[in-house]
Length: 243
Image 1 (tube, rainbow, N blue to C red):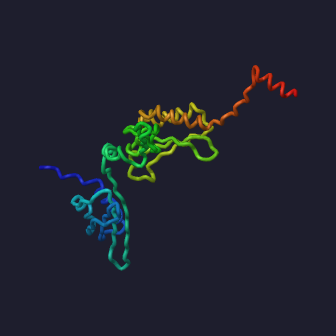
Image 2: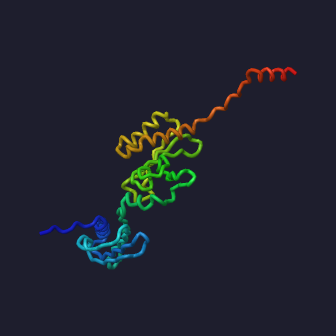
Image 3: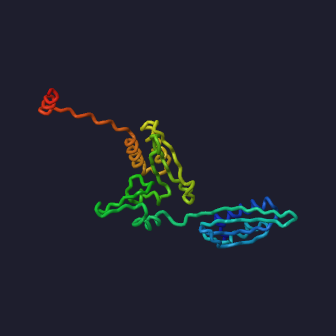
């Protein structure tokens, strides 16, 4: 006898949200509205009591999708609770995204007079060279090092959270590296966050090189000393000064 197929992840999450709303009201009637990513309603289910855990396995909604779960109970004092949740799943792989965007994307810079070399304006591309390894908009794990704005001289190490790639608002982790920190400690912090933690050890050298270039640009340049005249030019200048 074959075992029944496991419920999809979104069904488990929706069941938990449904049971949470029903737990506040007791036995009630529940309505589940499913919306696509464009907020177009693509399905509605009505169920009574705690039948959600038995019914959700048979539902099939396109993902990513937003669920709006409403529970209400008819009584002398009508009560209504609405719980909203979202389920997002990775639709395509990073390799497929690269194959689609490798020849044309908003970050690509290519000019005929430069010999056809491809560069990238991607903020998560440490070398600005257009390649699969360095393409930050494709990889779930990518690194960016930017200069702090304002009078404070320092850097900010930005890394992408692989588990939050569907949530742009919370998908970045920022580590400020103040200008008062020594250069050696700055490089050590970058190496620890990228290589030693097993994040992207292949980007260690590129990240340190970019941080070094930014730190050097923040050092104030000294005024060049005036060149001294020598030989015949010095004698001529001295004679003109005496006159």
